Image (cartoon, rainbow, N blue to C red):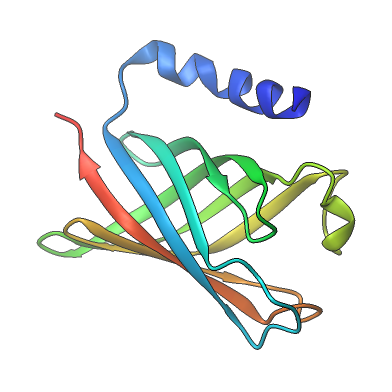
Length: 147
């Protein structure tokens, strides 16, 4: 849990600049071609600061192993139509005591890279996996502007 506090503390300088622009609520996930039984209901909450080029997010969620994870991310989005955006993101997620489940973890910190989309108040992310326990993960939830 100390590492969770360190990751969240590293994101605090961003929060000192201004309040968050967006609140997102993660609802669940779908693991493709999973070789084990993952938890697909993954409640979580994220705050996002939308800057000129990149968006920065920080949050907590119940991971697919039923434990709490912290996450910090950076994303780049392009607006394709009114209220429809697509983009890419990179993140660091803390999976306490579960880093050995991932082939690419740094201790219990797992780097993530994927695609994301938002239409109005709905979002989704596609995260490719290494194929050991799943080929990929699709996450989804709702999001709201904070203005």
